[in-house]
Length: 117
Image (cartoon, rainbow, N blue to C red; front, top):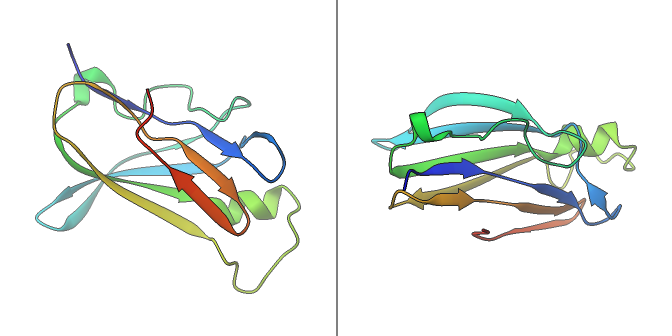
């Protein structure tokens, strides 16, 4: 089996997929962030390609940074200065060659994640 990484972002306040949300992927090496790519979610709240495809997969520590503030601004969520949630970093480890799915459930004042399937 070959490993890869996917995500899915749901806007729990609006009850729909979070379309147009920017996500940056970093590999953490010697406690430094190494930017690998930035993608944007589609109408289904997913990225059009795997965030980390099998050909680029290496076990280790990674971080997804979800640009929630810009998304909330774009959806007309009443503004705050500063926004309670702006950038949401999720740092996680991938220790085996497997499918890792790291979804985000988002609202203006809270979020949750888990290892999905």
